[in-house]
Image (cartoon, rainbow, N blue to C red; front, side, top):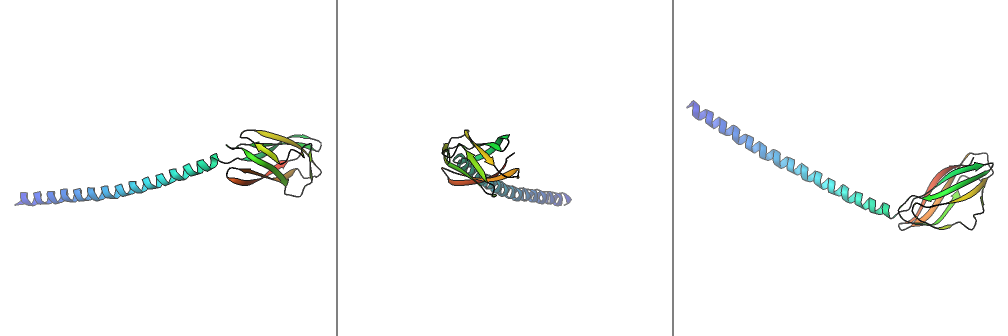
Length: 151
């Protein structure tokens, strides 16, 4: 009689462990499916962002030469497509004079990894100047605000 009870109890334990294993497998399988969906959504999002980035130009500027009140400013395109109609304006009220480049701006086309430079003269005691650079590319019109050191 005891052996029958022991065998029934062991069968119940085995059945409970089988049911627990099946429930746990289904639960983990659902979590894996959810993670897989999230990963695929992120991959699609990253591909879209990369595709958008590949269609954009990024125009910036650096000041690199200072003598008296003359500063040379180099505009560059670090994007993947050409930038068109590049212009800039001073947004903090300083008076800048563009020297020998009046006919250069708006700059018609700036290919990726290329640059052009202009000379500016400033009559101010402020060392920093904020400029707003605007350009167009395949995605539309963009602008970027940047600070330049004038002397």
